[in-house]
Image 1 (cartoon, rainbow, N blue to C red):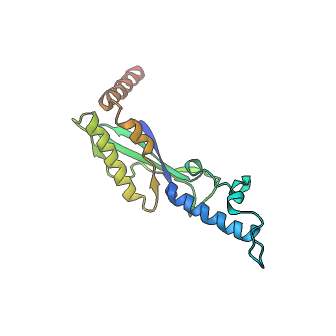
Image 2 (cartoon, rainbow, N blue to C red):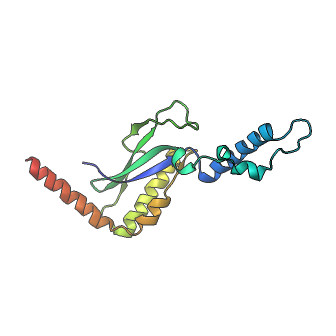
Image 3 (cartoon, rainbow, N blue to C red):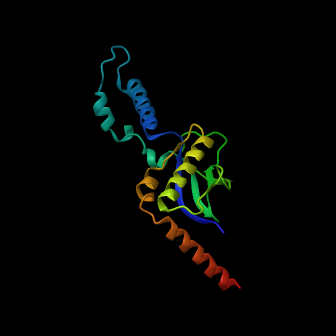
Length: 172
């Protein structure tokens, strides 16, 4: 049985690229609507334009997610299921419907006889493999890095196994 332990968001593009794209779009809108066509004298300054509620860029963190890697432990291996936005072409949208894509995004990594630090590093290696599979996408491992190094991985894995054994015993 799978033992899920973390969901890693996958983005259409990185935060930096997103805000560069948003700034370019804001500048286009500003030039089109707020500069007088003949004389190019601004009706309002660009800085003032950016303060308008309608010109604020959308939040990258929640609006640009296109998928999730669900990390799990199967036996002595780290794997990750992949769920992605159901669309023929990925582009900026506000309506998302996620679907199951694959049971393992990249080749699994064994964690047999590893200490907590080695398991954490193995998970990071697995996520690096996932990046190779998801070209032109951004995998956000910021939050995982913040907590992953403090997790007692062997204890967590043993607790998962104990819980599974208890559930198995109750069924029999």
